[in-house]
Amino acid sequence: MKIFNKTIEFQTKGLFDFIDITNKVINFVKESQIKDGFVNIQILHTSAALIVNENEPLLIEDFKENLRKTAPQNLTYQHDDLTKRTVNLCPDECVNGHSHCTAIHLLVNATLNLIKGKIQLGQWQRIFIVELDQSRERKVQIQILGV
Amino acid sequence: MKIFNKTIEFQTKGLFDFIDITNKVINFVKESQIKDGFVNIQILHTSAALIVNENEPLLIEDFKENLRKTAPQNLTYQHDDLTKRTVNLCPDECVNGHSHCTAIHLLVNATLNLIKGKIQLGQWQRIFIVELDQSRERKVQIQILGV
Amino acid sequence: MKIFNKTIEFQTKGLFDFIDITNKVINFVKESQIKDGFVNIQILHTSAALIVNENEPLLIEDFKENLRKTAPQNLTYQHDDLTKRTVNLCPDECVNGHSHCTAIHLLVNATLNLIKGKIQLGQWQRIFIVELDQSRERKVQIQILGV
Image (cartoon, rainbow over all chains, first blue to last red; front, side, top):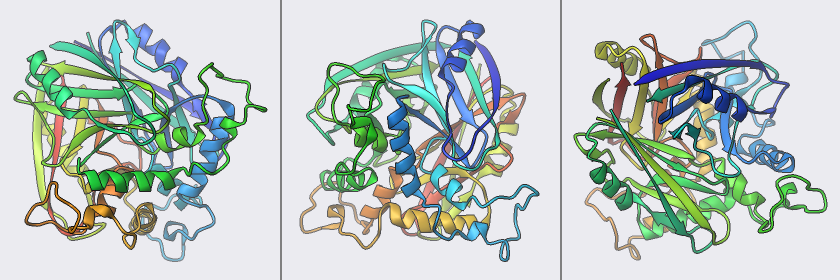
């Protein structure tokens, strides 16, 4: 059994930036030379998420419109009330209660089957990171375990 | 370590068809003779999804009602505007922006623990494929990795 | 390859009780002495779920407010109509159609990468069980597979 991992880092452009990382995952699977097993893709953030769906530019606009309603930005979030908050405060604190609330409706990890050297993805399935906060540096970790 | 996989294919009956595949998964686990490891169930589509929850017919009606609101079919989706769209067009293109928008709120894969020959499911947990589009041919892939 | 599993049991306090199990998971990873592999955390219930996000008390209040809208408790759920229902009835049956409908929007399992003895979690990522029903006994299963 072999295990390999890789962390991909990138800068998102802002709220609802969708970054298609499918080719990076496929290339890492090839490099690993693991033929059969699982590929686990994990996001390391709480105000960004994973989406596995179609990469069609108009559909991505639809996703954004839908996610705006999942946790509307114009509601009041207690997390953003710095007069009350005492926990987990950091220098680059930003107004992002809505980002976390959207994130819990999406994926933190996706485990995909690896069979005969090919990561299994349906015809239209692509792997995205979606930024739910403002422009930030983000990390996604890919780990492959198999033979 | 052993790895086995199987693809289940079926025809869904239409929007919100819920297909309980639990017994098919349990049978494949038995056939595999793997006793301890992980069972990963992955859907290979972007307008259908996985749900792990209770199989109670009235509750399934409640799920449908809830999912209708997750991405209402009567809203306008840019993905369905064939006067604007230029990408990923195929002969059987159908009006399904709402289907993709619902799918991103549900599961693409479920990784379930396999212990002493038994896939771990709570008393009421059943594994469903849910059709979010019209009647279509669908594939679900099960991969078991363990000893 | 080694595999270890552990089931954590606890009593929730009621609707939207958030229980942070991160330290229990980290401790079990240490005990297992597995260094590289996957940690799969699976909930065994259909009216409770997993959330991986930040443990900030005001944000948890925001999550509750958001989840109340995901499947409002004051709507009518057919699952709760005991004049119509004939399936899966049990002695401790409670009015929980909304609980199941919220659960399908959240996680049933989370597979996290284990690298050099450390479960991979971003700076703010914590693992929660969230009760979506009334106070109940709940079980979460952790399985680690690796070397």
